[in-house]
Length: 96
Image (cartoon, rainbow, N blue to C red; front, side, top):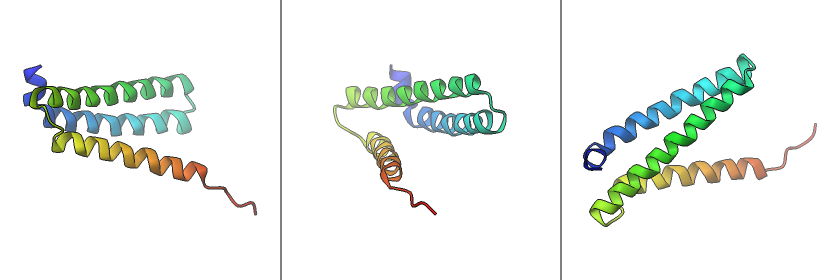
């Protein structure tokens, strides 16, 4: 656990980069190649990477006893992404 705490920022940046790469693979497989099963695999991997990032924030909180800047950034990014998706989906489309 100390390895994860000492290298938290590096692991977070690597996992975030992997998330964006997997998102690109997801869109490529889903909409360009039309491979639904393979795109589901990328989605599952994205979820596991997000769980790993939450674990990193939890370990940081467990060791330091406070919510750090690392956790604030992670929570803010996911809160903004979730709410922006929610707003876009709830906006009615006009019919032409």
